[in-house]
Image (cartoon, rainbow, N blue to C red; front, side, top):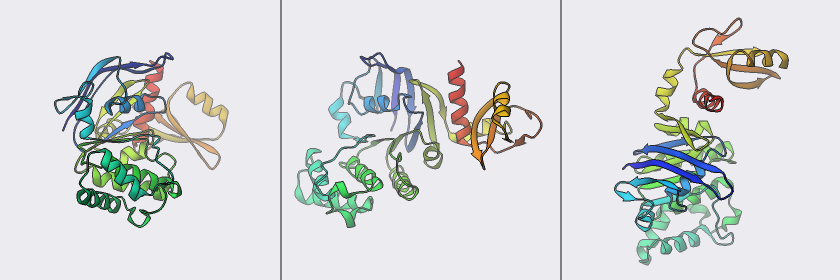
Length: 293
């Protein structure tokens, strides 16, 4: 299955330009959409999910015009938005049954089979009769995936799904996404680099409503081989001096001192050690290049 986005632009009434002539092609399996808060990720996800119209551009989903054939698109789409609201006093079992009816699954025996299978798949069976308001953040996100999987979608969109989850819940959720992504196309929109690194064979980095990079994470990492250098910097003054003369990708505190990571084709100076490149380096370097242009 292929999702082809061409020349998409969107400016909101308050003047914010969320999307700027954005084009992107997304194929099967997990696709990571990486970018900082305010990059335009949610605007893009809402547009693909038929919840808003762009000012210009087109979206094609395997021959379906997403902008004009919205009802047909919704039949093959599962969506977990950044803010997923539910009726807090309802149980997961009752809520999924209710949503299944809205999705057109009206035969009781068929609906029962589908709902129970989804509760098991998302590891919520034991908590199926508990009120959704009592669920942890990770459980709510897993329920969000369960509702997104109703009616066997071919495309699933998840928007910032692991923000705020503790490490154990995040791992459970990513494992669930990984198992789903083998059968359908999943777009994972996030600002968390590790989520994309762990799950996605292809990705795009966007900022200010534009695509900065598209491709396989491994290719992006190979392009930086031998060009990332690290050094511990003792004082803020030394850090500021280096910032004025080097391309600093990122800084991290280690024991109260700054570890800086620098992009340079050869050694940038005394004390620098070559280090393996990471997807975080690719991400920050592309954002830095975007802000300096």
